[in-house]
Each structure stands twice: as structure tokens, then as C-alpha cells.
Length: 120
Image (cartoon, rainbow, N blue to C red; front, side):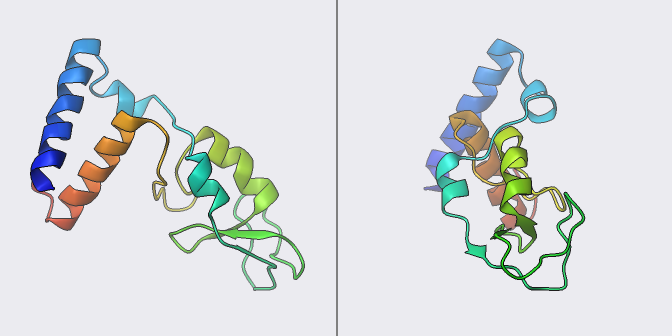
């Protein structure tokens, strides 16, 4: 499995160097979160003391609230437009999967590097 990730990592690097997108892909291109991931996010009826960071309103009971994997809560109506533009949490920048294959390989590579102590 590790050899496959290394192969894909170098494939992405070669592709980026040929197209000139080496740093451009990370810094300038915003990727939408994967639709399949967004649809599978857990939902609740609110009721906590927290505020939605986007609209600054309380999470009132009966409001549709979305929970991201990083444990941050948002109103669905607030987070959906955000996730259509970018695949990160507005608070902590936790990355959700996207539908871009090369970006996903890079995201998984970064996660693997973080887990293994930063050595890539």
C-alpha cells in the first residue's frame, strides 16, 4: 500500500512539474468538497450553546445543524455554499475529500506524512 502511495505521489509531482502547477494547485485552486462526503455528513436538530461561525446565530433547537468530521457544527444553510467552493472547515481548515483525483492523492499523502512524523 505504501509503495502505491509513493508511486502516486511521484505521478502527481511529475504531472504538476509538466503543467507548471506545482505550488499553484495548493495555493490558488480551491476545491469543492466531494458531494458524496457532504451528503453523508451527520445532521442534528441543534440545541447546544454553540454559535454557527458563519452566521453567528445560536444553534437553536429545531434548526438543521451539520457536524463536520473535525467536530465543528454549522447550520446546513450556511455550510453548504461554503463546501461548494472549498473542501475545508471554516474554523480549523480540516480538509474534507474532494472529487479531484490529484488533489486527493496529495491530501492523502499529506495525511500519511503527518502520521509518520513529517518525513516524506
